[in-house]
Amino acid sequence: MFEHKKVLVLGLAKSGVAAAELLHKLGAFVTVNDAKPFEENDAAKRLLEQGMNVICGRHPEDLLDEGFELVVKNPGIPYSNIIVKDALQRNIPVWTEVELAYLVSEAPMIGITGSNGKTTTTTLLFNILNEGKLKPLIAGNIGTVACGVAEEAEKDNVIVTELSSFQLMGTNAFKPRIAIWTNLFEAHIDYHGSMEEYAKAKFNVTRNQDENDYLIYNADQEIVSTYASKSKAQKIPFSSTQILERGISCDDEMLYWNGEAFMQRDIIALPGKHNVENVMCAVAVAKLMNCPQEAMEHVLATFAGVEHRTQFIKELNGRKFYNDSKATNTLATRSALSAFKQPIVLLAGGLDRNHSFEDLREFMPNVHAVVVSGQTADRFAEFAKSCGVEAIEKAEWIEDAVEKAYALSKEGDVVLLSPACASWDQYSRFEVRGERFVKAVQKLN
Image (cartoon, rainbow, N blue to C red; front, side, top):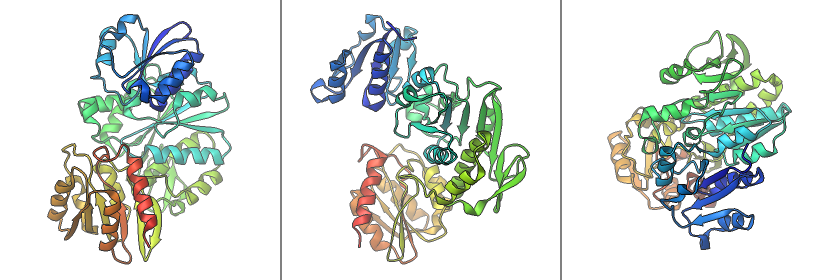
């Protein structure tokens, strides 16, 4: 399929390196182009040693004159990039490595997307299928590169794949056996240009599915349901507001499959309504794959969350500390705030994308103190003040914020990092912000 094809891999990081190495093994003539200078680029040096052509430090405007048949780009590179724009104008396919993973995989793929809940759902599902001895592999936006996992997968595996809109936008033939669409809220408009383009990218998770495939989707969201109606897959809706005759749903006591109660809701260890929705998505897949119910129940009773997603850190002097650094938008922070009945000291703020915080207002009465930081510190402080929060402090870095939050807290409080903003104004990734929060909390005594 790729032998003797001239392929440009644009941007390195983990996904670019994995794509370049796989294409090279498959016999493609690979050229790598990365903005980082060669002298500082260990990945580029490694690829050069393997026999690939490497161009570093710039994106030459005439690069595509060399006759490339395919561009595989890092998902984070925008479509405004000069090379990407030129490729599209020349009708050269522009993929992300997810497309490559699908084409080389012997194992069926489960694709999981949505504005929020992807990582928790992916991790939870992997653990359930693993407990049920169904040989899952985990891949995608969660940190393990999909094409690298797909290369090693065998027919009796199943690849549980977290997918961002950035990754899905660069797919063509991608067709997961089971797709999950958790929800859709405004996000990444700076990348996609509009909510419509963002939604269209998400729809790629099911665009190529047919009647032999399944789409699990959020029936409580009209916009997701509207897009789901365009899919040719067998539809499995989920709902936390009504009992569905088909699909998976819940009330305060039970989970229901096709309208029949099958599991007690109180066995779920994860807090919050949003996590019940994540659970329903994972359980729906497990049901479709005939996973033993005891495997589902064991994992649901013991799974306490993933890093940076309402992750419990420790209890100190009656205060419980939670790391929700992944909450890079107001919807995610709403979910976190609604998960707790205890009084909350909230750590918030970060990159300023000029989005409103008004979506949080109805959940702020339970917040008695706020520590703000980052570019949005002043705006969030004003918002918190308008919500009646009396104790508001400003911090420069997360370590300072933790100390101030602890000083403001009382016995019985939850101290919650849930920024409602991306981290890039101060930290390279939300994981870095979360890790520094966790270390600062662990030092408290």
